[in-house]
Length: 269
Image 1 (tube, rainbow, N blue to C red):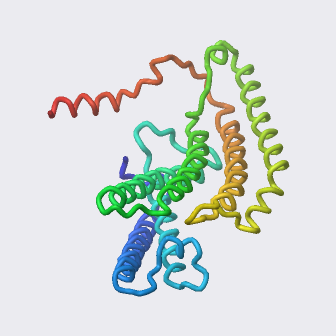
Image 2 (cartoon, helix red, strand yellow):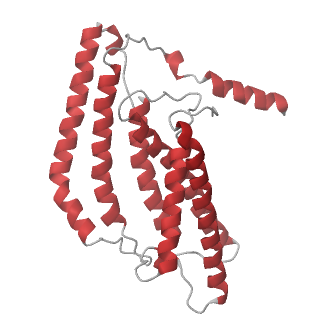
């Protein structure tokens, strides 16, 4: 990652301090919950964390964790990866921030599964929540990654015919593709809005022992992310409209930087 600010500018420092503050608060509350689980007769568990009503400590934990994720995503979005496409559309920064959140959540899945493996095979105390938690997080990673892929133009694209077209033909193809995405989004929201709202209003649960409200949260989130993907597609169309035509070859898929990093690692061994 580069160290220069990409878009935060003077706000980079305050955002970093807020990120550190929320992470520190989250760690302190987590340690307090661990101590409570050891010494208290009525400790807070994962069941209480998804039902925090009337539990101030659980609510504070969720608030601090949300703040840590938000400010970490903002801070990490202020740098550009070597192989990343820099944001140049009116909606790109939103997609980059959400993409950073997807990257962070991927690490959370690893942590949850590691906790489950240790708990199950070392202490013989499997959890009731790790599988559902990993599915819950993975659902959002999948949705957020789709938006990020659209912003990076890294979704599946077939260039064999596209590269043979004149520039005006490529623009027509791009416009038709975006119109199809808009139509799909409209149809999906039109058909799924009522069901999503019903699931959200009754906070439909998963029906397991832990019983998290996965359907009640993921279904509305699906419609929201699809709308964001549609907006990003329109943003891409405007951002790319006056760009010079590009030619694509199989060599474009080769990541020279990653190959060089692998070569350097092998040489060091």
